[in-house]
Amino acid sequence: MQAFLEKMVQKHRPQAGEGKVADYIPELSRQNSAALGVSVYTSNGETFSAGDCSVQYSLQSISKVITLIIALMDWGPEKVFERVGMEPTGNPFNAISDLELYSPKKPLNPMINSGALVVSSMIEGLSVEERLERVLKLVQDMSGNPDIGVDEAVYHSERATGYRNRSMAYFLKEFGVIEDVEATLELYFRQCAISVTCNDLSRMGFCLSRHGENAAGQQVIPRSLARLVKTFMVTCGMYNASGAFAIQVGIPAKSGVSGGIMASVPNRMGIGVYGPALDEKGNSYAGVRLLQDLSREWNLSIF
Ligand SMILES: NC(=O)CC[C@H](N)C(=O)O
Image (cartoon, rainbow, N blue to C red; front, side):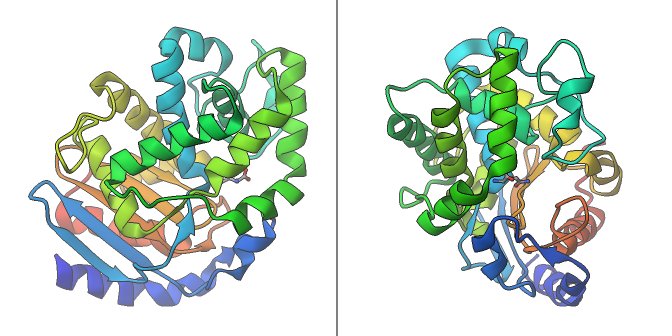
């Protein structure tokens, strides 16, 4: 496995030049566009890593999986899905237009920005700090790494420039699905800036693959919710490229605009990928292709 991962990083790293590092969050543009790393954590408790695995990067949209789990724990599926839908979208992750087109007036799903804003607004706690602590705690519990925290530079960078998310949050307030806009945005920008490595992501994916039980054997997510969020990862996790990803890779996965991908192969392994040069849909260019090869070689597709 180790040798194969190293071969795959070598094969796919040159392709990173085909993609582009996100720059609408200025701090993200500082990432090395040629970076590529992958970690695998298997059900035998083994870790395999290759490439740029020690690099720290922000969760960005991968945090949407974590906040969805917490909102579901706080409110239960019925209440959460009164405010956010369950259907994939054919539009980009930060589209506003969907919000006007569909009825009832709620975001299409929790894996796109509008839906994730609604989900973050539902996380319980007395202050933004307390609510963020709950998100961090779940990330730490899933990965088994108590040192995971927020990258302050990435947080401030998005906070200063996140006009589109701000507009969307006000739009959603008009629909009555978000109450406190400013608190919601604060939490959202901070959850997106939670900083991890491929190793952390592989263990988080592993936790989901084991139905919510982390590598230390603690049930940190209820089984039913692990199943529910993995289903969203299949249908919506790679934004409007989820259909092609399901066909080409066939693994529940969630990507982020930093270039991270958390993938979860039921009962077998978690995979963490980092490749900040993105394709036109906002997924890691080399990362998706690397996962495609792993899936083919190890027969990982769930379908
Ligand atoms: N696709 C993403 O990772 C988006 C997350 C990013 N923080 C944003 O809201 O734009």
